[in-house]
Length: 153
Image (tube, rainbow, N blue to C red):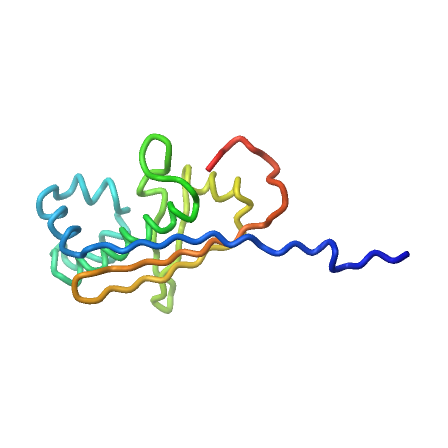
């Protein structure tokens, strides 16, 4: 009897996360806390992408708020939080592709968790309008048993 090739096919697992952020909240945090806040949450590349000439305009705050929302969305999709039990803010970086579209770069513990989930691909969508910034993250994972259970989400 022939084995049905479709019987060995596994549908991918999709993990999603979303977050909505008040742009003024991020603007105020940057004004109040300055460089320590920026350096804890954003990589130097993210800061230079958003803060033109180091100036905090509404446009810069909106871009940073969208990246803040993206990091929250990715952490939700990974099933972690931030801090001691979770990932570091800078383990999740939002970069720009040549065409200007955003993409996710993971490092450190965020990458370890993604690998433990058998992560195959990432996708991120960002938007901001007036006072709010939104991000939606989709992770595609292989449903096969992970090779190692050393890192738990």
